[in-house]
Image 1 (cartoon, rainbow, N blue to C red):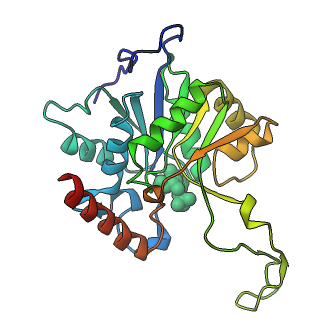
Image 2: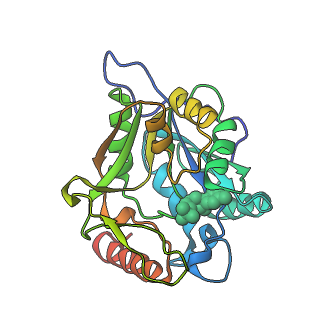
Length: 262
Ligand code: C5P
């Protein structure tokens, strides 16, 4: 890992297009309480390798991404740094991608902001990718970067929903049935994933301006009044949240090993 990450822009821009560097911020500071007791979620193993390492590899696999900033649990930055060193290629590299580790905060939003604060000059596109989505395919990462390069201030990978969604009124007493108040038209709903991609200045402004609690970064850009667009998401970019997701993630890895000798 390097403390001075300004590698050459990659890939070579199309003729007439200026070189634009892309960095990825990976918030990985969550405890992962819903996954059950144990190590912080990002450090749990999938196929014998920590989830965070899969997530860093997924970003580094994109030729567009030349820096990854990992946001570690506030008291665990040293541990995360040595763990990543252990899993880097011989010589400590991640191919053409540099990796920095910074301590995170109390909320996901705060962790992303701390990652953004650590970004050196020279990166004009920023991806924000949950460590909890370790298996996102590189084509999805590239599609997000491409849409930002094409001029969108914010881009999210999105999938149609299988389930019908109900809006409820929270029950007065926890555990009591919750009254349904609305059923949004499913055909216009999307489940969004990460990496979400941004024009850097827009994301920095969003984090400086929006103070409400949010569950993703794109909604902060929406609050600025800017348009967020979608690109197709991927079923393998699901978020590992509950114990059953670990079973699914192991199955996806096993299928990849069978299909591509991964
Ligand atoms: O809790 P949730 O699943 O929404 O977390 C999404 C991502 O945000 C995870 O990768 C988690 O590690 C990260 N996170 C963080 N700092 C926090 C809470 C969550 O980096 N304080």
